Image (cartoon, rainbow, N blue to C red; front, top):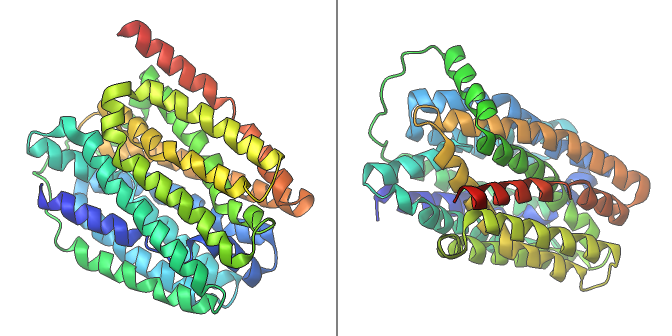
Length: 386
């Protein structure tokens, strides 16, 4: 296995080893005094990520993958320190701003780093296999952090916030050991031409356009509901147990990522995307509409399809991307997804303040049922072209 892949697996683990993941919405709400302000911080993360998304994607294509990872790690350390200080809304706002910058540096770049590392060694066909393995580390770390953080949260929120700085420092150290893939051909176009060419590629490529829309909508609503879900779970379970629901999701997602390559090979990416979307919509809506103490566990079962759908979507998009614009194309999709998240997160907070967490989640889950139509169109198009 190439050293970059081993380093990327470790890097992904420590990137998501946050002790505060399961209770962050509760922590933000306590500091700010409302769900709307708390969710607005998640919105700040995504909007700032959106604002930085395309510039960082272009920089990645120009300055290289390693330097981009290093800049992301610096941003992450500063963001978590701001969260740990957390004295008022504006300090949290600053942390959210830098978390958005960190996400922008990593978005598109890290997948491109993996793809180019494999392509350089003649193994790019194994992309889905290795992406599943290294992405599983995100979820393993999240599960461990959530369980530990959930227990420590009953004693001190401040403690878990400060302890979460340490893994980000480790990421910064690891970034120095990454090897830059062989330099791609020199770019003759200027940055504006590079961006226009990438945007035109998305618009003119029907499959890439549909895959991008699917990813944007699912990301905006899916991430908003994921971050907010702890507030719903806290209406059914005590605070100390909230983390276990999220941990179950992370464990399921880790398994999903780990076996995604094999499942994609045997079943197919388009079919898996449709199956995953259909299952998650039915389970999420039913579990919240008929809320019981078992609802958090049932909702967590949707994570068994999460990693599979993420890897399948990424593989299909990477196959459609052009070589010189790989990070930029991914960044354009992420840019639009982050903007959509920014708007949707605030809307979800407003709905929760007005109608309560349960009704807000039901509305959110119903709102992105139409993505099933996109998955069906992609599946039918692939079936007829095969």
